[in-house]
Length: 301
Image (tube, rainbow, N blue to C red; front, top):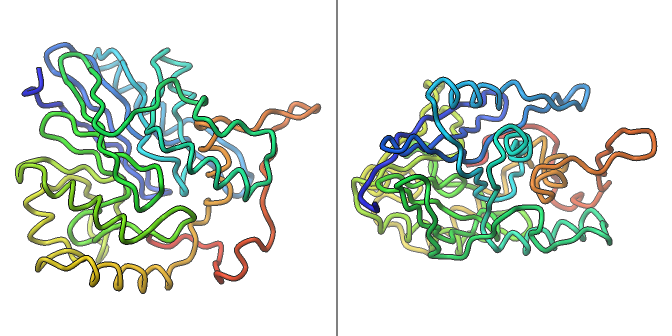
């Protein structure tokens, strides 16, 4: 069972430079969604399911049965489509158990005194090292914080879904300056990933197309070790932390950070509609003023 390798299909979300995945067991035709994206129109602040419906059509065309809908962490740059896909397929949702730490941080930032920061918005909270099944596959959960306090990597056979830890080798590594993030912790998480077998396929969650190249999202552990622009040459932890923190100080916040996180700490659900039937987002004014952040989309490398 553990020796099986998944068939992985990536779906590139151009508006947020995100990649969502379907990982399927070819023997049983059972699969998992990983980090699906719900579209968000910034101009009119409206959601739609165009991107997620591409994934729905693919699964149906391939005759796959969805067993899990997985998030690696609460995302800061796009909304999760997990609740929508659960409504379509009935599959359970899951995330790492440390999501409660992120929920508590952002509960305070958004001033949501009645918000239950207990992870109950997902059907399953995974522990570090926990295993589960997708058909005949046996994914393992690796706690990999640093970008956030909750991030996990899903290792499925010869595939590792790392999202915001490693980017493609020419893109480096993810930022670590969001509330709850930490560059030193990120470095140590990356070392756990790079300790996987060198032929392990690495699937990242973003690609910002360095140099204007076409989007890419698959590399290997060996390629990351040899060529990652932030790690090659056996960079020390101290050197990595110094460079990562310096780089992070130059980055603006993602345009959707304050929109997306209040949805994603809810497992991707919009806030409850008010008396008029409309859901409203709550934006803290001047909370991050000292950081000098600007609401423009910047590569999060």
